[in-house]
Length: 273
Image (tube, rainbow, N blue to C red):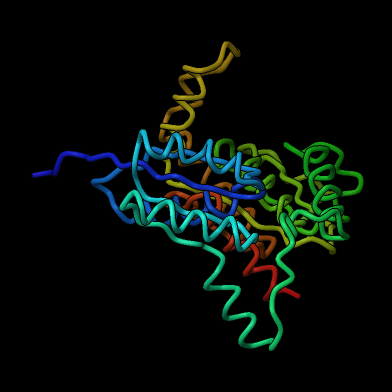
């Protein structure tokens, strides 16, 4: 018998964008299937006035408090306020900074938003995003050899979102659809620079995703073939055969999140270098 789902408030205070807190908070909350977090995000909190506004909300809806604030006085204030309210709070970055300081033998610079500096890595990500958007769904194949990764697969195997996620990691990614009975474009077959990876999923999952696509779109789909599982099974068999013929690794995304698929691709890329 399933337990009823409960709810709790999760307050996240950041002196930057809050992305680190979101990732940490959601990773922890995902371990509790019968408790769902109600997220409250307070980004760019860099002075006492902004912090007081955040705590006005926290007092109204008490819960767990996570924070990433490098200013030691603000951090100490958060600890004091949470103690006064009887609320648990955790500085997500502080234990990591302590380990770095111990190993490197020098204290952290404590620069607010240091991870978002406009450095070479930032512009690498921008270039990767531009490249990926230009090479979505088989477009601009004339320079596909400049990609780091090329994803191939039939419709609804998460090629585009995976490509964008990889681009955010600085990986230039193109994606090319596989259509039943049609050869892969010769530009992809002859490419020597990128790692080509095939994405597949179960016919059941693809059919379900395609059905949702039809319901949410006014486009003219041949819905009977598009969602028919036997037709999808033929498409998948054809995709597997193409990847086998060209020696391209396959990743089954049926039970993988976008993040897990991207991690598997990056691992393959590391081995292929």
